[in-house]
Length: 369
Image (tube, rainbow, N blue to C red; front, top):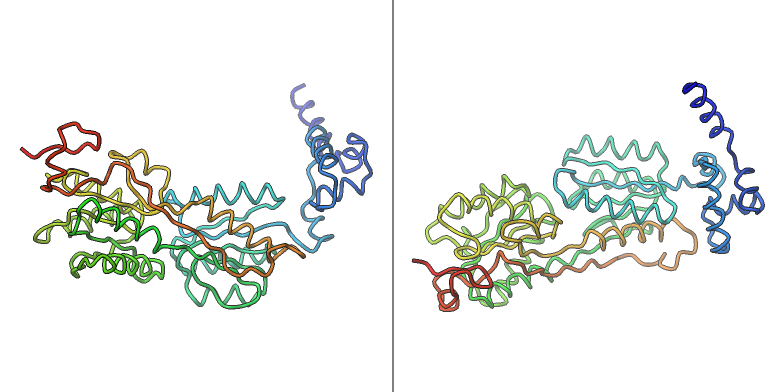
């Protein structure tokens, strides 16, 4: 009996079509078609009624048929660097939520920093005839960029892209957030501030490192070569970089990291030594992944909002895809950054403000015995 019911149910769902939706919603078939294809001129209340009927009868729109009629697949491609770094799953979730709300499906793929994998991913997206691609890798190689550009469909890049009509760029203001981080530490009294960069083969890693140097220079603070260590944006890389900094004579009183995963590795490296955070060493990250606020201590970090990136990426793609979009002529989309102060930064060790704080004080700093 169970098998018979299941088969009947499957046949019922297979038989549901646009006529059933129109009858349920008490509208014409043409109206249902316009709603399903997200035609903006449909009355909002009428559209709600149609979508309610679609849910009630279990109708599944044929996206391939819609693509043949409209000439668009209503699929957006999203390329990210990896999924082991929590920043990228958070970005994917925000991007997908926003795209689905606008009537698009999303095809997602991580490159894992591998050129051959990236090329294969791009080829599969082209085979699916995606309407546009957001390349959110913070460092795609130039030859792969060219493969995408040759296809002449809307593309969105982070930081830099070819100056072509259907290319849009999300410009992250790295300098704004890093300057705030340096000024925050300097205001606390830190002068020996180190920086752990990302892989310097990546344009974004060089940009963040240079922003650090510039911000230090603006305050008249020197940056010895040994105070800048190249990491790889992983926890393991952060741990190794911090161990290298500690091996130098006179370790820094504060460390700014190129991303939060590096900063988490720094926290773990310091936990294995006599140095405490923030009593002995202050630590600042970059990205503000969700995990940052749950570290011990909670991590001070430069926020680069996943939601802001995702919103800009989806809107920039729509501007290139949808005829008559209000922002079709816009080429650059600014992404702000800002410092989020938590408990991993404090006055430097040995200074009067640090010594004056009582054990168990508000910022968690204690007096050395």
